Length: 415
Length: 220
Image (cartoon, rainbow over all chains, first blue to last red; front, top):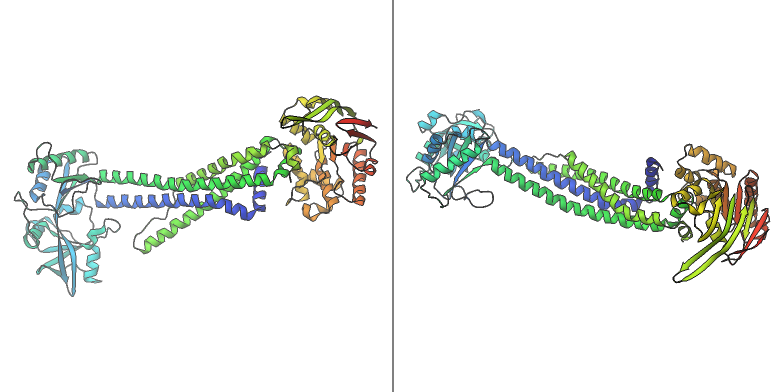
């Protein structure tokens, strides 16, 4: 029996029981839609997070005060411990050969006043290097310069959103704002980074020296100027591990931490963090896939159930087919084809539904201000449909073998 | 054509053995039209099943066109049923929801023949149903349904047609028409064996084999 005849026969049979066929497909349909939408959404989020990590800076190493604490290694909440100093940053820049740039940063919550607006925001004290280490692009005007830093200039660079809130349509460059009663001249506006790590869009940046002089000037126990974090750029991707090690060594020496004692700071490379995040996404994908896979299994059981009913109902037909010359193999093939066609159609419709779910979720998230790529990766489609067809084939085996084993005489007598 | 030599068939019902056929020997020549008669339970259906290669005898020899059928495997038997034998049943056994044409094409699917539509059309024509090929069994009268079944039996040019009470579900007029069709087919050279209870049906055949208690009583 030729394979296309099998398919034609199977299609005809399934079409003659439309309602039943659709209900049977539903299990597979939902399973495939679940696999497709879940895995696609996890992948899309992963891609977004990767993108955001990249926007943080290349070959970035992040040094924060406080001991590293489990999980992602994000040591303490920024600003709660004050063990890092400007002098630490200078030492790293001077003594760590694998490091190309060092950008210490302070941060304070301040009220910022411009015209009639009075807004609470984060004001960061930064050095000119901060722009390069953390991948900031200037939208209008310029960033803080070496002269600004050395001269403790009262200049300020505004985050994209903050500039809009303060000045609306007016160009902010050249305008002035007040912080703690002191006047600052706006010299630039940053381009928005948006997405996950977009806090800076709502923040302002002033020279670190100015911040220490007029906004806050806390001193560490060691007597240096406290900073909340030090962003370090390694010379290359390969140099990240070496830089990590060098920074730890320098800081342990400077902080007089002896062998066996815990660090009072944490060093973390964005690469490693990204790796951890990626691992979590893989695990997430597997869990989602497994849950969705279970619904495929349930769908498979549904197919087997209906195929068994169908075999019983069509006992006479099977007897007749055998009488007019169908071999066991022909009968097996017929029922296997029916099961496979059922699951394939269910799978194909599931791809459609899954794609729709991804589209709708992406739209909903976009409306909430989170641009989300509405992409269903083709390998996910192939995998889901492949598994669906496999499930159909496997759940068709038992009914098909039962049908093929029927004794034609008994089958023909069946009422 | 059909040579049976001391054929026995024993069914096992639990521990008791029920003999259905107790040593049947007979010959049916090519081109014959034979009726098998006997009371119910006499073993005539079992005999038909064995002749039709649907069942195997417990002992004895069965040669169909010189081939020792009782030694063949399942696949080979399926092939013989497909190519050499046409079945006509009392209850027609057509596939519901399937057109007359598709029903007649069925054996051709399993023989892998090309030109299925053409051959099925010819077979339907030869039973006088060329005008009803698109009808489903439920849209056809009983006599017409049985004609579709005969067309299906004819479509692979079998040497032998086995009809198990083919007129059992039909009225007398239709039965007579159908018997004329069988007679016509027989005159074209097809060997026909049919089981019946009705003497007037058996009268259309050339001879009657009577069976009682699994043995041949009279072979006319």
